[in-house]
Image (cartoon, rainbow over all chains, first blue to last red; front, side, top):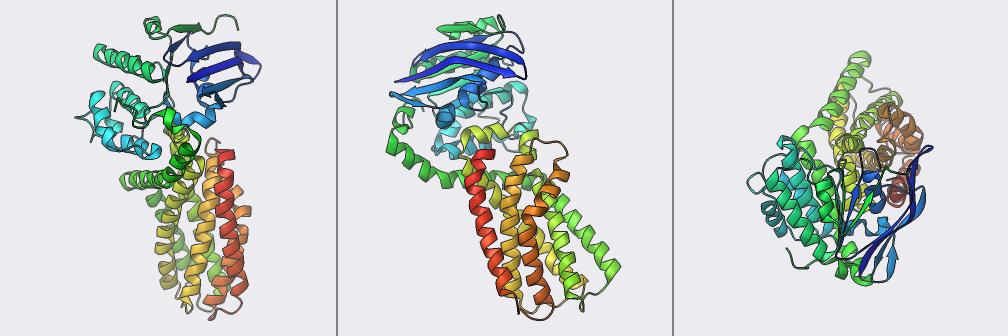
Length: 205
Length: 241
């Protein structure tokens, strides 16, 4: 069984606390939506969960089959869509996907399947530098899922998508929840439906 | 795709996880190096800037000093000054381009730090090799120098390049997010490169002087320093990345 535990978590930049004493558990098969205005620390919380940042106080623990692991230890088992985690502009969509597949030791045959699923099959030989922001987000989603992660961390996953894109995200989130955990950071309250749990940042800190 | 052919629940189990990591490590190294080669082939940024610098420096030196056939120490010094600064120009973009394009986190989240180090180092080594392949023959021709023990000379150059690629990769990662990184890279690289530069200089001067006498000790130093730089980089990279 899988669970994400945040225990008395706090992050400060200088003397300014983004959040403090944050405690919650996300069990397998569920989703967590992190809501809050810009600058409230949503993306920072996602970064703490995947080990890209260290908390100022408290800790993040991934519990897998009764074994406690740090975010760094499980990094390769997480899929992440973050604003500062971009694909390579000078590579094609297919090459970017193959890179991620190779890094995770995944069969390259799944690359085309995923590109098709996110609606980029026709653009697979196009350089990512020529992509629109919506196409780029679709590619980032495919790149985060190609290795079948145990947890999917998404930052504003529907912000640049049309209605068709929103439906795709919705479907991918529901599928991922059946396999593991989904955590979504958003300031769009419509996205709250994706989570069995919601936390709101930027209120009391 | 939907079924769990690579299910996390299976991969996390102790030995299976270790086996997956071990077998995949080489694939990661190659994927990162290949990605850098592809990017460089399409942009040619590092190759063009490095070769432009090297060729300009070489032309200015050859025009100002003419033939250095009778001054092997000076010739060796000028050659390694050009190689050192060409190396700095080449290595400066290793991680800077990743940070500027926000792709550094993509690597951080998907690859083992040691695989990133080795993949990047292999690319840097190939780049430096290309630069040396252009500079050294031109230097020999333009400055009218004869190289008699070319085998030993090639070994010395290769060992020095391995050292500079390994240390440059580490320094590049450390300084990637710092402002004025190229100037800092040159300042930080010099003391670290110094043992390799000094030994290469001795070997080069001896060979350009007409023989390989006295090359054995500096070659041993170069070999040991190249090995230490490579292993040190491999082990320390995780701490700084």
